[in-house]
Image (cartoon, rainbow, N blue to C red):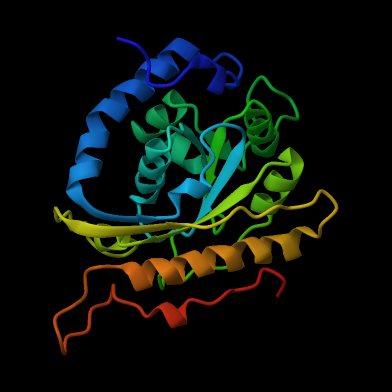
Length: 257
């Protein structure tokens, strides 16, 4: 059985990584998860043509659920892109989860690689982008407690500037209804998931990192607002639900405070 994507799009991996094993694990997980992702949600996807079918690109999204990475990976897969995530280094220490993250080639943020002195997560991600890969990142670094886009870290701007590739802002809405912080999982089939992909944002090498980060998050906020407007499911008339927020409440929280 052939692999779903050609080898040239997946050539930069951490030192000592078995690339064949990575390919096989990714292909296996894709085969298992994709049908459930496709049929388990009521998908509303807008603007996915902004994701280029080839070449280095960063997908940056808001973070509202433990399912966000799967949702972003599914939309990238619809465009034929294989995504590597910058994930918290602590996740790689969790049994099973850490093995899966390492197994598909994700990059631990905030920890330097063993056997690669001085090689940070940012260096590794830039190398992957230079090789034409797709990198996924949640600039807030954590799930939002109030479901509004939060203050972001500047790593997203430094990544886009260092690689000189387009950054695609993405708004996610709906996955929080399945599982988010301080709430029990409620895995209901047919829950709507709205994903709005915006036009690319370019970050210049000499641009102030905080200003660029705010500009990126402002673009993400715009996509989140549109995702909320397009969201097809609403509470019954006269009933309020914690998961239903107005598009107008979505505003930038600057990292320049």
